[in-house]
Amino acid sequence: MAPSALLSWMTDAAGREDIAVRETKRAVTYGALREGVLATAAALRAAGVNAGDRVAIALPKSIAALECLLACLVIGAAYVPLDRRAPAGYLRMLLRDLAPRLAVVTPEIATSLKADAANPPAQSGLPPLAVPTQGAGASLLLVDEPRNRLDCPESPNDLAAILYTSGSTGVPKGIMLSTANISCFTEWAGRTFAVASSDQVSSHAPFHFDLSLFDIFCTLAAHGTLHIPDETTLLFPGALRNWIADAAITVWYSVPAALVYLSARQGMQGLTSLRQILFAGEVFPVPALRRLMTDLPGAQYVNLYGPTETNVCTWHRLASPPESDLAAVPIGLQCDHYEVSIRDETGQTLPDGETGEICVTGPGVMTGYWQQPALTASSRLPGRDASYRTGDFGYRRDDGQLMYSGRRDQQVKSRGQRIELVTLENTLNAHPAVREAVVIPAAGVGGTRLLVFATPREAEIDTRILQSFVANHLPAAYVPHRINWLSELPRSFNGKTDRAALRDLARNLPDL
Amino acid sequence: MDIVTDRVIVWLGGIATRPIANVTADTDLLDAGVLDSIEILNLISYIEEVFNIAVPVDEFVPDNFRTPGAIAALVGRLREPTA
Image (cartoon, rainbow over all chains, first blue to last red):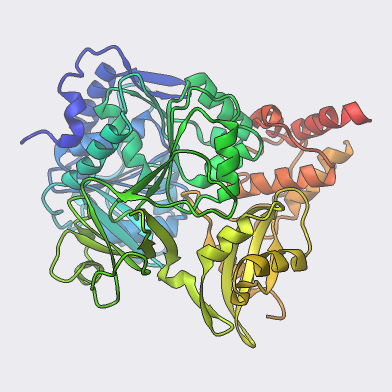
């Protein structure tokens, strides 16, 4: 079998002494990583894993977890990282959906998955479980006998990973990514951001989040060093700042929230080792971006756009900080391996300047949703396999730059007019008293109400001040009905704003 | 027990979704499963607000927030210059 394009680093890794991955208490050389991956692959094979299988992995982010997912690729199996903090019931649902050959989990998760002994149906969907043994040279300790194995259908040829995202209806979708899907992105990103063997790359995103594909595969392909912070470090700006400084991180990729959180405490000042700061996943509040770029002027700042189904499909390097807090940051130009078009509901391409759905065609588009062919078909442009209708809206500016206008479900009618929530959020974020604002539309007595959840920069300000600020910049339909101040916005596992939690909060507000 | 430790313990017992009881000045709040990330951020915001302090980035490290006692020591240190 030809070695996976994602494992090119292994071909000359034997005996290499340069550091491949560093975590808090341990580092491995390229030579040692290769040996660890091969040992883990042997252990997975012994547990019955073959090419075409899937392996679920619910472990803390670590060298051991990385070796496990790379070992799957060595075998030709797909790795499926799961959030180890998710409740047991949710993990069980994902495992039932996935039908993996094996699930590699922590001892705690193994216990909680099996805890429902009084509930046989809950047990029946469980795959065989394995837990990694402690210490160097990751081999696996089997918990279950492989004969417990379920009926597991074979994955499509070349499948490298399945990343689960929570669907808007609450039913998780398994996004299938082939080796070709991932490698066309990592080749583009490695070339565009000139990732090199001297680079110290942060691994900020969890492995079940698509940003990790850049961290892992671009770094290893370039023979750079990947740095895995411990989970406590991520929570404390002072610790994170020290970690960036000590590791002399050169390339950083995260959701905007992590950078906003750091820069709000002046935590980015003086971190001059950083040369590339990449962000994706949601809109970066412009005032925070301006502050960040002013605090740390030497780095290059790049706005990346793309859902997990396509990974990054457009990019925009900011030559200088946005000129005003009300400036909109483009999502930019299409990546080399993609064709990005703006289309109407019938699939017709729209002229520049008109707002429509952002549609993507090219070799990076997912092979489909795991075992959901109808959903997969409905996400495609008619008659085009490697295509994806993002459900995001945008338009192409005169200068060719693509602009993001929000999700399909973020366009609402307020006071009889169609408004885009992202436009209102950008304007609210531009007010000096606001650190971050999110707009949640809610059904009220007199029609849709625009509820704002915001965190203050320092002190909360009166609702009327913010309302008149909006009225001075946007049509009257955009004026929010109510401002709710919070000390922090709720975040989902991947650091994005948890809009579902805010909708719950909105439902419990009196007097809509 | 000093006032800061006391307020932290009362706050932990008052988390609406999941009150945390049996906390002492030495309970490790960062141990897996005690506080989740949002709760830690909320606790820090609460402390900054009620004790009228701003935790500078260099002090914003796990060891200063590991236990109610450590938080009390931090608050004491940050309030000292103006006391």
